[in-house]
Length: 227
Ligand code: SF4
Image (tube, rainbow, N blue to C red; front, side):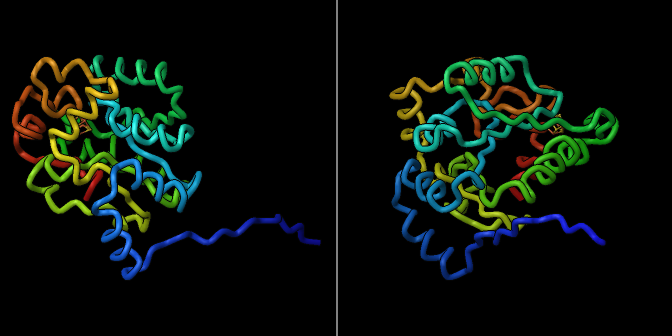
């Protein structure tokens, strides 16, 4: 006789176009904390966040609302020591529920395969594999002022995986961002004090005072995670 394995089916809470429009209209004037609270209420433990550890602003905001929120760090194998040190400091300060995703040992690299293939293998594929089926929604730290390409970043959208993507800091200005860091004594990657306006992997990041222009030698501004 065939043995049946009991399974629990759960429906994915998705947002249709009408609800998405209404939520974005409502959250456009909400604070980052209010946006995170909405996402946490809606998705509970099926909500996670990603962190690049350029600083811990989004971590500070998110853990204030949901202390156990899962924080995902993409360890490409090419991070600056200063970034890994920021991860360590954040672990100590926030007792993070941290998940570190790493690529396979033979993943494409930037020297032999180029930056598109390297980012795809070391960032995009690991996050795609992990998020799909594991969460229903995720928080990212995109801001509209980061770059012209991010100027239209919505507060809430459906990403290419079909997951709900929430950008609680989308409409934060630089002044608001810097004030939050100062007021909350947010941890900042020490490379920021050495002139790195944007911090990625060491083979592809130069000091820059102009947004993301120090990334990939100016050949691109996005790794593919947010496309
Ligand atoms: S930023 Fe550079 S080193 Fe890092 S994954 Fe992309 S191409 Fe590879």
